[in-house]
Length: 259
Image 1 (cartoon, rainbow, N blue to C red):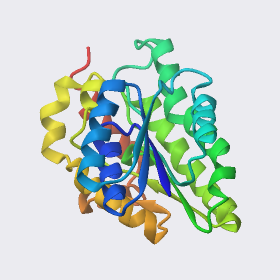
Image 2: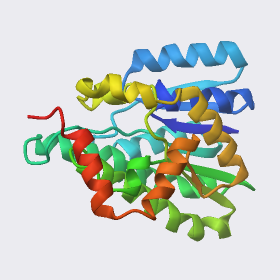
Image 3: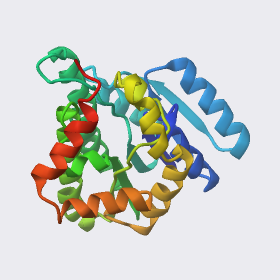
């Protein structure tokens, strides 16, 4: 059987791919960079002797999800796991950032995730038991000034996953949401947050540790997976503290280096 992973060439996506390859799942990896995909596919297939096929694709482009479906259907890959991992953030004041770039982010974080889920549910339904893992963030649980749209996009992922989980039980499709905190990936660089990189690294988990917890939680059928005690505690604390306090703390952290 196959697992399809978006954003599968590096970071958390790559590490999830490695975890699934250990369990002898064949892999379909999707990302923008053809060269990075090829390198990751070679590494995984040689290490674990599984089949790894790649599909270079920019999910910010409309129609990309359907092209991916056509590739899967034409090759008759029997997919049992869908990992919607692709996503990114943009740091800055909403009105100062490029609207076009922010819409592209929503296309990847939300629209492509929804479209892929919709298109692949019929294929996942062919298995006796199948899985969907949508990747959100601890930012999904609160407003984050200077990452306002990113946090909102991840809150969408979280709520969408919660509802979908109940809907797809009848099809034996287990739906889970992964909400990592700061992780040692390319996120800060991609988001333009180089000024906060040193601070982020102090609290970051390693991507392989996040992936291990994610895959364990996926197969246990957990609704929400929050890796790391400090991340779990910070999310739970939000329920007991005033939203204004949480948002003021976030604002002091994330707007400090902005002009």
